[in-house]
Image (cartoon, rainbow, N blue to C red; front, top):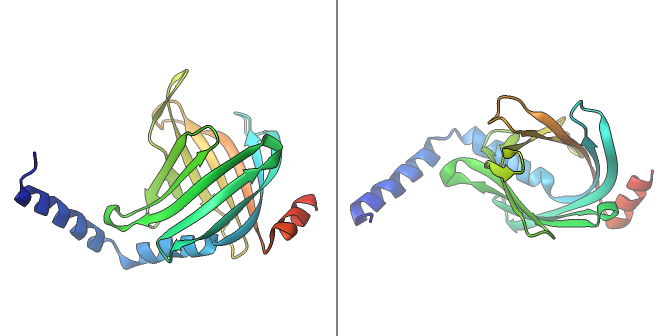
Length: 184
C-alpha cells in the first residue's frame, strides 16, 4: 500500500515528466487533433503479406471536439463490411503520449499509443492463434485536407513488421459530399 508521501512523490514525478517534455511535442500533437476535426472519405486497402492489395473498400470517418485541444470523439463506418466503430483520440499530457481508442460492434477495445511528437502509435501485445501480436499505425503524407495511414503487425515482438492495411483520408464537408467523393 502506498503511503501518502509515496503517492505524492509519484504524482510529482508524473507532473515533472510532463513538464520536461518540449513544448513543441505538445504543439505537434495538438495540431494532429485539430487537423482531424471534420468529415473524411476513406479508402482502405487491406494488404497481403507481400504488400499487394487483397481488398479495397470505401468508408467514412467523422471527428468532433469533446474537450478542445485535448479530446476528440469520432466514428468510423465501412458500409460494405457492415462495420462501425466509436473512437476517442486524445492527449495524455501526464504520460507524454497521444492515444486513440476504438471499439466496434464486436466489443473489442483497441488502444493505440505513441509519443506526443510522433506520427506513430502501437497497441499493447495481444494473444492470437499463433501466439502474441502487436499493431503499429503510422500517419504520413499529411496535408491540410488529405493524409495517409498504414497499419502493420508483428508476430515476433517487433523484429519484423508485415503490412496490414493502407488508408487514404480525404476531407469532405458533408456526408453527401463524402458519398460523392467515394463514388468518383
